[in-house]
Amino acid sequence: GAEALVLGLWFGYESGGATTGDGAALGVVWLVAVIGGILVAALFVRQAWPPPRVGAAPEPAPVAPPRGVFRLLAAGAAIAWLVPLAVLVATSAHGRVDAAARGWWSAPPNGESYRDLVTGTELWRTLGFTLLLATAVTATVLVVALLAAYPLAWLTGPAAQATGLLLLAASVVPIQVIAGPVNEVLGLVLSSGTAQGLALVHIALGVPFAVLVLRNAFADLPVEQVRDARLGGRRWWHTLRRLARHNLSAVVAVSVLEFVQVWNDLVVGRLFGGPGSSPLGPFLAEQTRSFVSNSGALAASSVLASVLPVVLVVLSRRHLVAGLVSGGVR
Image 1: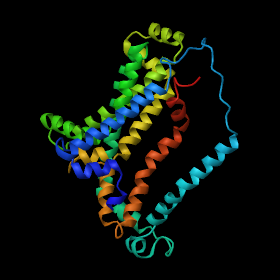
Image 2: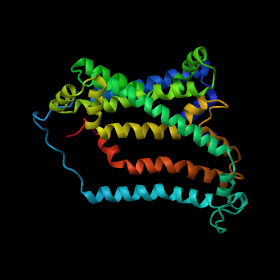
Image 3: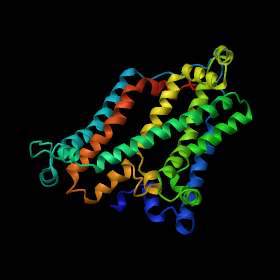
Image 4: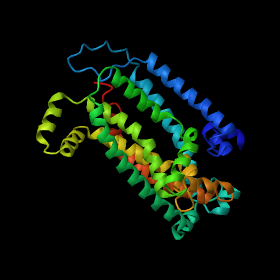
């Protein structure tokens, strides 16, 4: 219901990405709140950039809580996360009637919802489009971010601080706030609701965060490695490739997070997609219009759609953690 909508979805439903009237006013208020949060973080969270080198005097380490506390909290969070997942999987194992009328606990599983999905074509077509979109966007974001992060990593002083602040601001500005102007610009270049326009919006949203992570990683490289890469590479792309190899964790983290973000996206697909370019998120959201009668098929679709991002995150979990903290800790 309307009382369960978060601000982002409510804004999208009520304003339709409008650039005038109530939608524009709410967008300005939202943007001011985001900018205020960024300024507070910039003024009160002091972090040297680039990170201090090995020769700098280390600060005294804070006293860490016992490991048992962290393990207990992690176990509780894992159990809380697994409960709805278990209910989703149990619901998906039932057919349309059993899942809607009886519930997953009152009837034995029969796999009818999965059989209906396998024989259909709509979900597979949507999965294929989303896979192609996420792959193309991730590759483009990675190339652009690598090209931008390398020169930005060697900035120092106020220029480095300003660059980091701008990248942070571009990473957190809500897409709903700028949806109207972006749609107007895309309408002048491309037809509304095209796959190309949807990909361009995803690329524009993904590049700032990717540059921020890779810039941190490049700035944390020892000078010797940078010198060896520049001397060993005959062309600039050889240098960039060798530096990226030294920061494999950061590259993997950016790639996996960008792919999963595009794969799981709802807002961008709803605002900028069209009949021929509807990705997975909006497709699943449309199935909730008949939530009760369609709960079995919706649960089965959600389970199938979750397999790839879960596998990617599990396989790259070590790189994710190491890549995101590159340049932040030593």
